[in-house]
Length: 98
Length: 501
Image 1 (cartoon, rainbow over the protein chains, first blue to last red):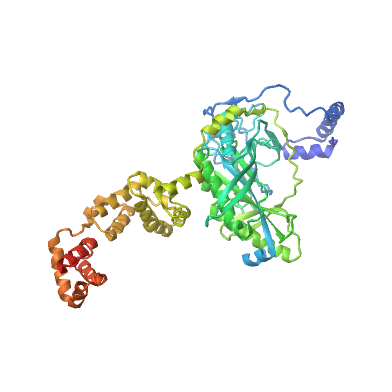
Image 2: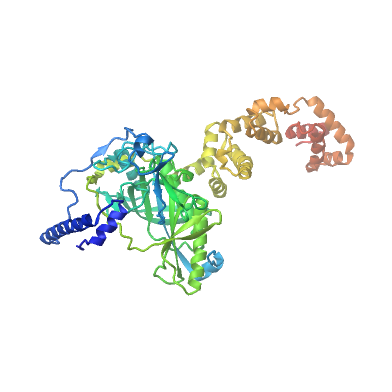
């Protein structure tokens, strides 16, 4: 597994709109490196003969009936938005049409 | 600068097109895929959302059972195998159309796979399209780009986001590469998307309105020299959202690719945007298969197991497939292949079925829809079914003609009155004073006058040249200002002249 460096953390923070100071970036890069190392140890322990586990609990088909439940008002939905306009979230133009 | 293109004919001479389609179908469930917020089109922005749709921290999605059942039905209708077990994954990307920074989608384990659809082209040729997979995912929010030019993202100052559509259940149907369509590729493209739309509509699992984005198509096109097995490099034209546009987009991309290849340049693998106004595409972002979405299994959703019993239960609820229904209707109505194909291509099969159910014969229903209404709809630029003619109206008009109350010419006049909102046929007949002169007295008077005025014609008829009768009928119709029943006039003339009809 690829290591995570400080630049990766800074890039992700920017994408996720999380403001981080230089100290925070240093600390987070270090903490994430530890996590990546830990996962690496697990990967070494589980050989090719062990199938990947996506769900540790043997549970399937947890469904909801198709019945309308609660909704937010537009005001509630927008209450945590940095910027809004006429009932909608206002975001910077991002030139990357999907 | 517009891209260079070859003519379609030249492109076809030199190259062999290979197609592929990704069709997204929005399901018409009451609620969203993973939240209980309503799945409704057109409401006030950001009112059909709750914490799950907005990707709030700590929320748990729960799968909508009906959405799963609808997806299985779509898979079955596409002749797919249904996975015994499948799961959802997270497709990670940063873009404001998803507040979660990932889209919940199936990735390596689609619910349905390995199917096919037999597509009938307008001349009756059947072309088999292989289905690679149909997988479940959620729709994204809707972005509106503000400022800049014409709402396009280029030059926009900011974007506004409405998450009402966020989390609406989608089924994405992906074909295998489609080879061998040749010059019929554009037609096949349109017919394929039309068939998928018809199937999901027939299943009742989607509203299937393309203009609302219920069915959206991404069209892949590549060209290769004739005889070469290896595929060329493809482009993917996004969001081609009408049947006509699908046909035009494939046509255009074939011509554009051919010009690129002719110039000796490689085709760039990229997303293209379709522009209805210029009927052309422009370059989006270059796309490589290395798009790294870092898919991983969605830990918040447990796997879905479709037991064979459940699948068979759902199979038993499937309606008659559209192709089988067409076959049955053609046999019931006794139309020739050509007549039936014209009816299907004109888009009035359902309307004719309803008209027959309302009491018309198959012949009468076809005469009215194909002879009168389709042409009027074309002029009005709407679908024939949207023109505003109810099946009962046709039955009423036809009954009036058969009872001899009005003639065919008057009937079309009454139809125009109905379309102009003047009322029911009976009301219009009364209002406009349109009634066939059924009293024989005035007719006989007019007939005698006409015979007297054209003695030569009268002799011919007496002499057995019955086809000469048209001149007398015409004169009588003129004299009665079109208010006579031409059939009755003919009978009376023959009687008058003592000729057997």
